[in-house]
Image 1 (cartoon, rainbow, N blue to C red):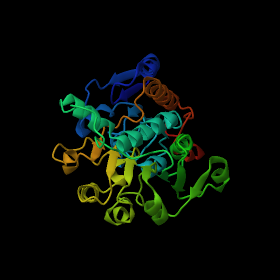
Image 2: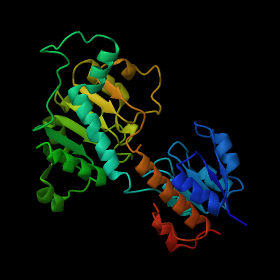
Image 3: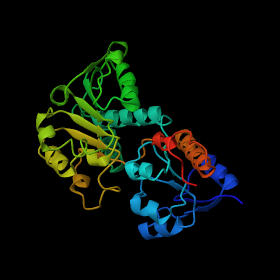
Length: 329
């Protein structure tokens, strides 16, 4: 008999077909995620769960189903999962690291370029029928080449951004919890404390994870230290930025532009004041949205799920320490 699992959203066929072949899978078909009460009901008789960032995986869910053997998160991030609670229960959690590094860095640099050169404003200008002639001061932006890029977070994606910046002869500063002196010379980057990075950067791109120390790290105090000409890009997690403070900074000219792939909450509310600002570009969390990358993510998530329900070690576990204990049967 195939192990029973719940897949909380339709994922690309590269992964879904693997799950359907190996498991007795119930797949949530709606575009929107299952409501909390339905998610709890659906996993009651399942031994595996393939979840998305929109699903809250907490102690309550775990305790409602002690037979759950694995949660496979279709994402690199896992702030939707209570990892300590899972580890305490011997429950392995999988994620999909590495596969979206370059794709996300491509998109972060796309947002940076689009914001600097006012690409979306230009397209809207044409669609609105406003383009009458070439103008010397029409939609002037700022140069990317030779500018200073500040990277907040210097993991895989931050490093990939630095590589892209080198092609534009940018000066690259980075701030991270861990200094990477081994990479500074080879990549041509410089470590800076946060205040220095805020003060000197023309562009700031956020690549940190979300935790207690990074939540709202971009607040009124941070914006007050940035250049008035600065452009902020966020492809990490929405709550890293205090949106009320960002609105104040953008509307008052404390910084030039923000380009956001992630918001708090998601989707951004229709009544959010940020939506009214021409200097705030918001897109719907699509940094990893290429056919190849999303397909590979689905395959990795499926392999984590299948390994877990079969009592095998996950290929990419978030909490490998569970294997120091006897896994739940």
